[in-house]
Length: 211
Image (tube, rainbow, N blue to C red; front, side, top):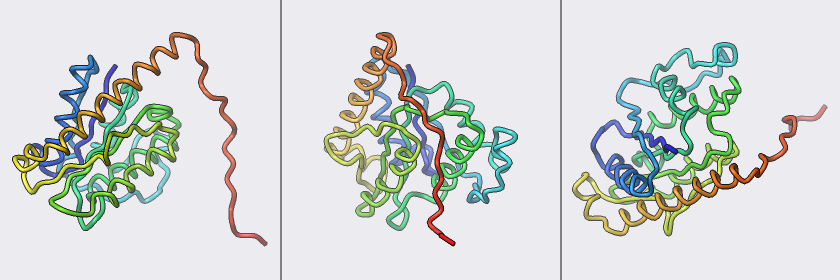
């Protein structure tokens, strides 16, 4: 089993990475493989809803998104990390996730369906819970079980060294990792025992405007 962790910070070894690394190390002790995917610093424009991905299965504007989706299909779980920018997720991770989740939906790739996910956020001081709520909405609209910890998944610090001193935050990351590992093992055991996936209904779209 493998969990794919996404670093939505422009800093490859900064605060967000330090939190994700703590999660990854603990997952490894639970015999869960990990990869950390760097969104990077190349510009990612917001999704323009061109729907080309419905025909091609790939985003026409972002190689980073396509590289991620190629890995996502074989991942068993996901953790998306973001720094806090103006009490919200970074622009890069927002555009990245908009494109990735929209492409997955329109192309019917089912990279995320019933796979567990969690959000991790880092901040110097405030804006963490708003960012945490924002990221979780991608999971709940995609039928992904959301993994929790003993506190909201956040670390505090202005530098990676600061984060390493946030002992409660790092513990929260380790608890998150163990909960993720437990869920994945339970899911695997259930599959082996013959537990069937939920019955899928045809999607219904309701427009709130009436004639």
